[in-house]
Length: 437
Image (cartoon, rainbow, N blue to C red; front, side, top):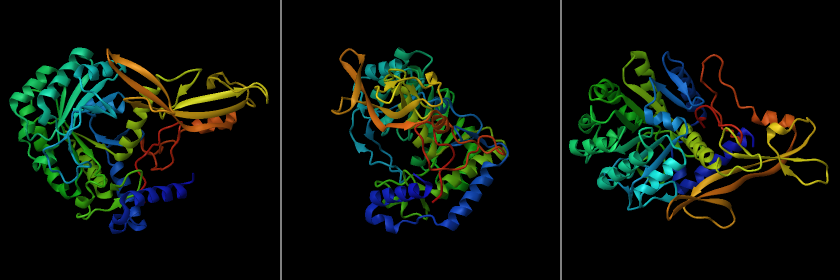
């Protein structure tokens, strides 16, 4: 699909998702897009600004230990429930569902099942999120304990909270249970650092994780040194994303919306980059990481495909850089059957080849019509790895296959910077930040 058709397809999808609201949204135009691209490029080129994860993660200083696990595709996240006591205008979901603890689509009603799952699949990091974990504090504590007891000291464990119900006693108990990192969304408490200070010197890594609200840019600049003084070592900034749930709140603000796989807020990305560049220029001790929507949308999905897809490989199949299962088939003669062959075993340039791709998904139970593997986790608890075809086998030459596997290159003038792009591949992860349109 060419770039024009890709844009049209994404615009159609966005219009379909928002229905009548779509025509009332302040969409970016060509002039604003050009101006924003220039501003983004200027900020990315500032001295000390670091780019990683194919140019989708922008930061000053090192990533937090939990973010490093995520960047290494080694993170498992448990949502302890769907309930929250915060009223953040930017929250993408209702947060009023009393769901059981969930990771992906799989319910983990027993802490020992989730801990055994994390160990079995070799995750390097696991987090407890929500909802708000302090609303279910004893249950959250139970899952942290089980993770540490089952997975040992090598697993990095962290927890997300808005801090409203945090107390020194509860934070002490989490630390004793084995918590390595705690992340506070201070946007829920009007940017108060009171709860954050309770964790200083108790939990090894204290992080603030918030959406980058453009109206708070100056306030956040002022807060950066105060966060460090309060014991924060890392600040994670997310790009505001429009959803059907938060649309009524975001549409009340003077935001510019950008098309894509999901609708994002232009000014939020620029705000995050302004803060990273400011911290780099001032050489602040506080590390700041902009976790872009492009990063989350591409890397986190690829991580799941890769981790679970590795359990489904057979007959010489291989995982691609995007986590897809590649099946290469060869044919000895025009009338002989196709057979799976490792790509590395194909030597003849004129060999008859075809290639297809599948993706792996974690499920609580098998769905008819999809190949799957049932994986026992604990006695009485299984998960299902489901295999979906994303491209039927298609004829290709060996040279065509080499070209297909060639990933886009970075800008030679700025290490780690990739031009923004929309095109995707079953072979490589799309580099660069999002396209403004």
